[in-house]
Length: 249
Image 1: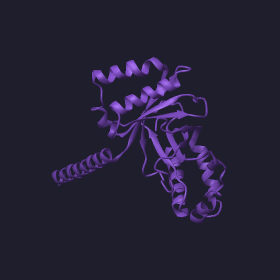
Image 2 (image 1 turned 180 degrees about the vertical axis):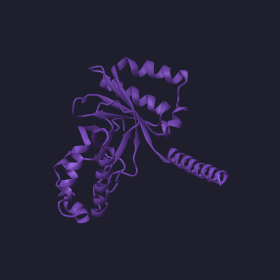
Image 3 (image 1 turned 60 degrees about the vertical axis):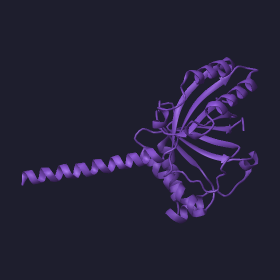
Image 4 (image 1 turned 30 degrees about the vertical axis):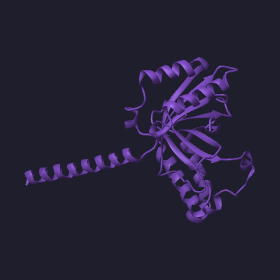
């Protein structure tokens, strides 16, 4: 009997292990991640910097997982900085990124002379389960980004709130937001990013009435205010920025 139980235990473990490996393999094949690097050009050399990055991207990062683009931060403490973005890619793709002598030499010769300072490098994985594309444009001109620090031990509460908001948007049938998870958090309030795309600043003046009504149609009267309490208790900090996308487009 003991031998039979041991065999069953081993069999169950093997099934669970196989399932987890298959799931991990599927996630590895389907997820999208962006590598982002902050750069501050020297004063008066912004155009030179943009042109140099454009030349580099066209030469070494034109398509596929290594496709490169350059965004510009318009608001907040980081305004004036640029963000070089590569992807969407996976961690496995990084093992095959262009790293030959020609690639490095081109960066050092063309881009580095116009850079005053390099900032953080981060890896942000797109969270398809929490994101809602809705009426999102495929190529918006701007993005409003919220970098959020999630309270330790409250990740589940934060996730529940976003899931409910997504369901409300799906029921209402409009709006959009993309959720990204920082793969190497550093305790500086950058655990999750929520991103809204828009094409004109005038969209900031539009009032669609929000989703409170739809939210309460699903979860009951008073549920929106309770959900906001969950949001406040699960978020430690929010840093809001607006980026102008792909300045070299």
